[in-house]
Image 1 (tube, helix red, strand yellow):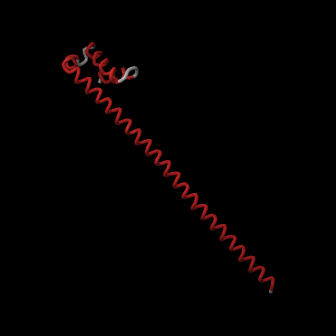
Image 2 (cartoon, helix red, strand yellow):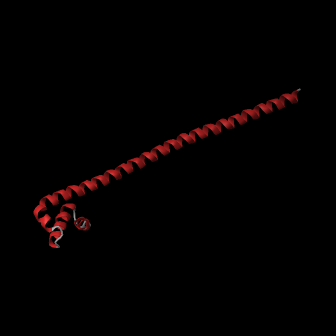
Image 3 (tube, helix red, strand yellow):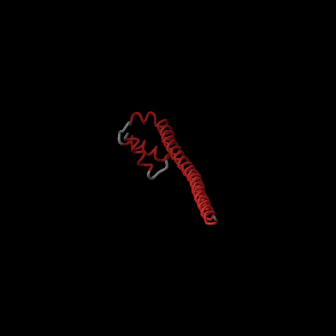
Length: 116
């Protein structure tokens, strides 16, 4: 965990390719996994770079998926909103037409009764 924390600290100021070797050297200097790191330094550096890149890759994939989903949600919402608005407009128009038709019929009956 100390090694990982050192890598993360170095990543604040350096690229991954520089941060990992710096962290390995710090660990060796401070006797953290010293024997293991001295025996497997090259493998640890290459694996660490691969693992950190994989972590970054997975994070970027998740973020990209979220953005795509968010955009799709907005598009779907707009489309459904337009459909609902058009339907509501048609319903309201139909209602107004029905009211006007009823008013015309009422006036026709009223006029017919006055003519008698």
